[in-house]
Image (cartoon, rainbow, N blue to C red; front, side, top):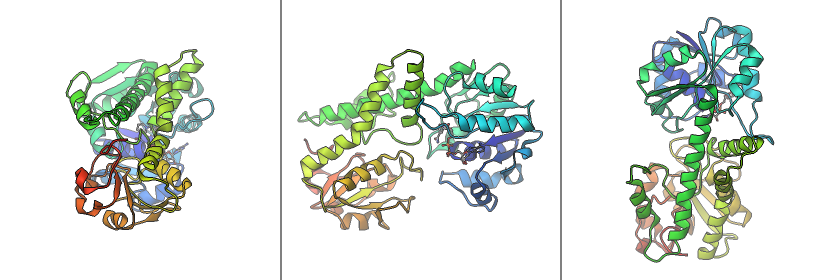
Length: 404
Ligand SMILES: NC(=O)c1ccc[n+]([C@@H]2O[C@H](COP(=O)([O-])OP(=O)(O)OC[C@H]3O[C@@H](n4cnc5c(N)ncnc54)[C@H](O)[C@@H]3O)[C@@H](O)[C@H]2O)c1
């Protein structure tokens, strides 16, 4: 089958590469000439494990272009363009613009919306373009997006005639939910809102544990997570949720519900707690470490999570901005992100730790787990990701280790 993918970012590029490895001829379209040129000269515009291998093994079955007319003869076209927030909650202008362009070239093909959109969007796009519109929300996680796309927990397909979408994902053998566009659109938002709530819940439990002598949220989370009704995922206390999805999707869902005169109290409170989380943590660091003015602080990790170079809504960056405002001098190390304006970047975690009296873990990169505890001697360590192998003897004190 010939398939189109519009928008070659974290979602579109992975979708295109995986589908081209499963008997499809795929044409990827992006408005960014720089991005398409990079791809056509075998350079990846993003860091995502296994993506390079899949693009390479797709060979001539995968092509990239800025010209929508290359979509001619596609049976289905995936829309994977951004859906940022605006004052109304969600900005659908990218989805509308891309869909209109597709409808000029292949009006009879199936238009498959993978971008995260509020309920009613597919119907609206169908009215605008006259196309058969299918909703096929994306659930992959950056950092394991290729694996997740090839081994999804479920495929959600919404629409009246979603044949192409059903066919292309058959190879995954995943349970498939065929439903209305609106259900599919809402399943995506409800999933992300639920996961954001779970993260917020365990952060609040961490706040409580830090006030109780003898309590450790890591053990509490482990004990909760073994209950299969709850599950162990997303029960890691830390800096709050970040990244390109949870913050924007919780806000969009909240605004959408408000527009329907429904108040989502839980989501409302999750958004408020999360947006204050960094400030609360910095206040706690100051209570334990004293004034931060002119202090050298080592921040380990810049990306919003491990195994990605994505800095969108990174909690680490929010933390650094907050610390800098208080006069701290930031030294940072990240295994992949090597440049960020205004931050002194170090070549290794060791170098970074040695330059500073305060050390903070901000991203859960695997390599930080094996940092030699000797390096922390006489440092103040705030293991905000709770990943270091340190005993209280190795350090002066720390959030999540010492008590407030
Ligand atoms: N990033 C994730 O992990 C993830 C996971 C699930 C769902 N989503 C959703 O998928 C959508 C895309 O997210 P992303 O992270 O891949 O975005 P991204 O910003 O990484 O990539 C979007 C791409 O679309 C291109 N683009 C913009 N307008 C275009 C147009 N009119 N025609 C062609 N190309 C255009 C941009 O140049 C960019 O390369 C969003 O709705 C997002 O919420 C993202």
